[in-house]
Image (cartoon, rainbow, N blue to C red; front, top):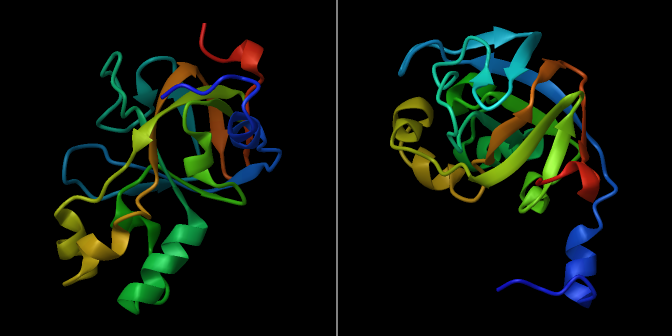
Length: 171
């Protein structure tokens, strides 16, 4: 159901002044390969991020995966794993300070790279292997989001994440 722009609920959904920060970056060179932790990477327009096995999949809705540090902390608490290494969740970018689910139906900047929210990143059966029994359920609702790259650019630890102007959004 599409809300009208003047709807009070739509106004609430559109109000997201918070900015986040990139606090971890990782790529998976091949399916099931170990995650490589990076301090910076390059987002490639409509393809993915440099070094990740999803890069080069034109038009894919899963060119980049993002998860909140706050959700890693929740998963760690449920699983009693302290600290919980981001590599275990197999996402590309860990953020802090912004609710990623609030980016639904929005475009957003990660520094100079423009991304488009494409969906939630649900857990897979690997979570049982990586986190132990109950790992799949611990990640449910906390798995982060997937995004498509509309405009490439560098992404590094400390990069700012912010909602794009409506003018910069879908064209």
